[in-house]
Amino acid sequence: MRSMRAVVLNGTYAASDLKTGEVPVPEAKPGWVLVRVRAFGLNHSEVILRSVEADATHIELPRIPGIECAGEIEDPSDSGLRRGQKVVALMGGMGRSFDGSYAEYALLPSGIVFPVDADLEWPELAAVPETYFTVFSALFDCLRLTGSDSLLIRGATSAAGMAALQLAKSVGCMVLASSRRPAMLRELLAIGADHALLDDGTLADRVRGIAPDGVPKVLELVGPATLLESMRLLSFHGIACDVGVLGKRYVLDGFDPIKDIPNGVYLSSFYSNFPTRETVGRIFDHLREHGLRPLISRTFRFDDIAHAHELMESGQANGKIVVTLEPTARSADVDAVPGR
Image 1 (cartoon, rainbow, N blue to C red):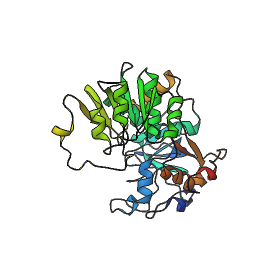
Image 2: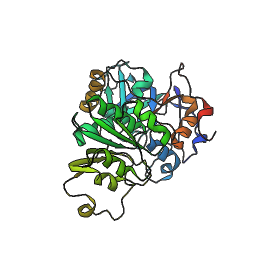
Image 3: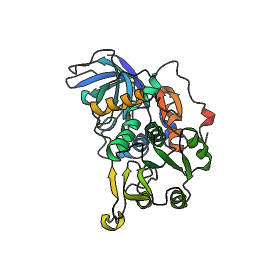
Image 4: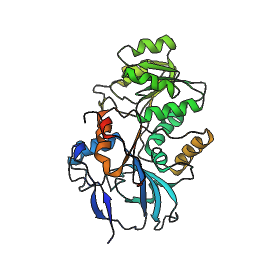
């Protein structure tokens, strides 16, 4: 039986304790395909799984984490895909209900594995699936964003925030991007924001100074911690879409829709667990048509997975972290990881 390198959780771990080990390569079966993983992106949900959720009764251990990847079909089983075909995979229970992408090979349901035709390097391709699926769907399906809109992005220095900024500018929107870190305002302007706003308790005044009647669209990545204020910043018939929990507050206790949603505005959300081939195709078509390349903050080798998680957990990544299984990948400088 062949073996492969993988990260296996047997409970919760500190980021520094993550390491790769040897496990058997899974075998393809009807309805499932075997993917050779070339690279994968890191996500906050994997930090939650590793640090807290792995001890919950609904997680069956041992478990290989990872909710997305880019790679090639190793064994197509009965999927209709072909060996060697370039694919991305994401969500649908990946890395929680069944083993995910922190491995050299991943056995995945064929319904969450999508062929792609994109002129992107593996790290770039791996930066797309979960992040761009989430923000693309939130912007264009939930917020129904058009070039005539102004958009406020709360939590704009996150991977999702930067991808949203890139996508919104590609269709001509005016973008107001907020961050709690003064040092990041210049970076937001550099990647296209029309206004980079410090989220220091005076954000409402700053937004009203630019858009006295409010903004028509808000992408809320901070989540319940700032959602009520974000809805109050909407113009009449404006829409807020809540897709993140960067504020580490997960619910709104005592939420009263009648009183808390301002008159004449709309609240939407997007849950990314159910990707479709049609939407994934639209995303790659959009990137190609607008000449966009996915934004990456840092790239790590697979053996440096602990350092990658330390950077993610520190909140200092300023964009998407990607881990590559390619031997030529350049690892991040360990000294740049806060706290080391």
